[in-house]
Length: 388
Image 1 (cartoon, rainbow, N blue to C red):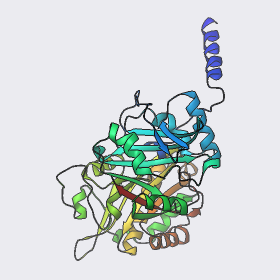
Image 2 (image 1 turned 90 degrees about the vertical axis):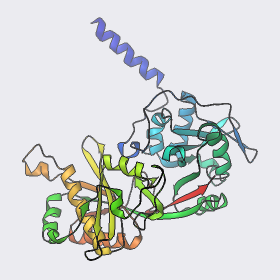
Image 3 (image 1 turned 120 degrees about the horizontal axis):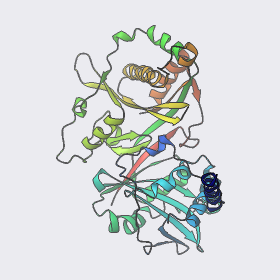
Image 4 (image 1 turned 60 degrees about the vertical axis):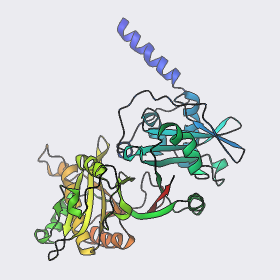
């Protein structure tokens, strides 16, 4: 009885302490960012500030109730309760390679912005920019980005940084700001999501396409793309099949370096297909299975290529992999085996997406979904890069 009372008291105290701020639950599709180190207590210099337009002061976010409540209010009003920043902010604050700053106006937190050190500190990836609706359109997040990042992040913590990178939704005011800040577009991707309520039917359709003649191979070494080993394991490599020398991992752009190929290879699968005569690579893809919840999973894929026919081969192979990963192998029950499968594809260009749409929806019976969590209402985004 005493033990039961003690547990009850602890539960009541926990509710009181968390009053006014919902518990944040990290989503696995947004949490597995490359080069994230072990969680721990991260100390930031809160005396560092950067003044923007004489009205806003940027400073480091504290892992305290007041700042967390303000971020909750910003994200809820900007993107809703499903916002991935809201779901992951507490975990990010504990990661040594992530630097989170916020803008204040009259001692009120009105914007938040995140930076991640990549490529052994050579690249700063910026993400998770959120502004309270009352202060949007003033260039708070992307205005004077390079100067702010240098003062608050680079000079103090990441002096080896050479470039900064981020993916941008096609909003005119955002593009104007990043161009003004010296950033250039290096590649773009078209994003699409599909689901099938009966994957067994999709497999039957694939078998009728004579997939035995298709030449899609597992890539075990990045040199299969014709890439030479650079002197630095973290140095980006450029290849026509890897747009802008950037790979995508859960929607996060990372350099196509030997180190990142190794990291991504441990968590997913690379596929490549070659020209029959020249043996040169014609299409390239990467895929991995990520658990969205206890009852559902999503297969994430990045597909690029010169030949639409070979790209279709990769689409089909990723469908097979997705179904294999999501179906329940512990039962022979046909109903259990036919649970729905969902795919998220990042295509190298819109023509590839159009070809994949026809194949997935018209031939394999998939349903195209409009809403894409974590990407807003946009089906296309561009990766931008600037130099420090």
